[in-house]
Amino acid sequence: METPHLHKPENKGRTHSLSFFCHSANALLLLLPAFIVIICCTGRNQSQDILLPETDVCMKLHVKAEHAQTATAFKGNNMDIFIFNDDALRKIDSYQRTDAGDGMTVDAASRKGPKIVTAIVNPQAESYEWNSISSFESVAGLYADLRMEDPDSPLMSGMMHIMADDDSEYCMHVEPVLSEIYVRSIKCDFSGRPYSHAVMENACAYLSNINSLATVISDGDFTPAAPVNTDGYPYESMNSMLHPGMVYAEFGTDIGHDVLKPEIRLYCYPNSSEEDTAGTPFTRLVIAGDIEGNRYYYPIDINNGEFVMETGHSGIGRNCRYVFDIVIRQTGVTDPSIPVSGETVVINGMIEPWNVLPETEIGF
Image (tube, rainbow, N blue to C red; front, top):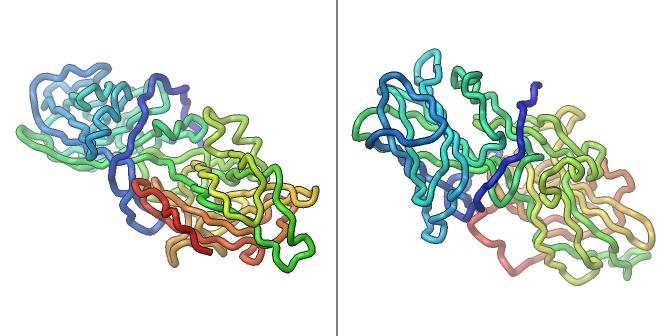
């Protein structure tokens, strides 16, 4: 697989909460950050860095936030807009990079007729080489790089089919590629064990078998691509991430018999693997800590294996939140590449919308 050349993103605005549709591995869930792109014909195009067709229809793209407090969600953020002919060849019609602007309104242009419109917000490259993107298949082959992500301003994308013409208006959802892994609560319950009064010290949480690449324009297939931390330890990703806190966090206190609410939020790309193999490993949440002077690991398959959160809907979907309430029942494994069983940890997990805070009442 050829990895695209990517550059550090600059001057990104903070992304705020909006509502839109998220696709879990096989489920359709209502989720958080949503942007609706409305396309309608208007005056001449004033955008920057645009490749215009010889005969064009100028269009205004209005990025509409569904909550008033998100009116500046895209301010200062880059948006790449590719428009392709919607025919057998699907050749590029026009391309532009623009700033979303204070009013979340940008200009675009294309020839009249059936088109495929793709939008990439917070692109990870300083500029995409539009002269190398000759067709829809070219942009569909672009990859997002987890190492370049910022969860406060994530890469987002969307696609739609339109009939470009005068006085037309269309809406398109644009959503992050990222998903959130949320450790809502954790405690130890060693009752009946020789170490029943022990606590877990120096504890941390991190992700392993993380896809480092994901297609920007996806058909829902997120087969593992260039996974990192395949040895079960966190160092490979921590040393390469622009924001290491996306994949690693420390609890900062001992984990004992009382419920701890650490508010740990980690982030990863989707993983639609149906079988845990060397080439298609399940992404895992790993809890690590010391019990009576020995280091133990608790690698938990995220929505897979013994820990499927919704029957029939396994794997990690795009733009979904996976909530974990964890009870540690006994000492874990010493090899972090080996997943723990349901006898070692008890998981109360769920998939829920990002726009809804997890419930404060926790039952075990």
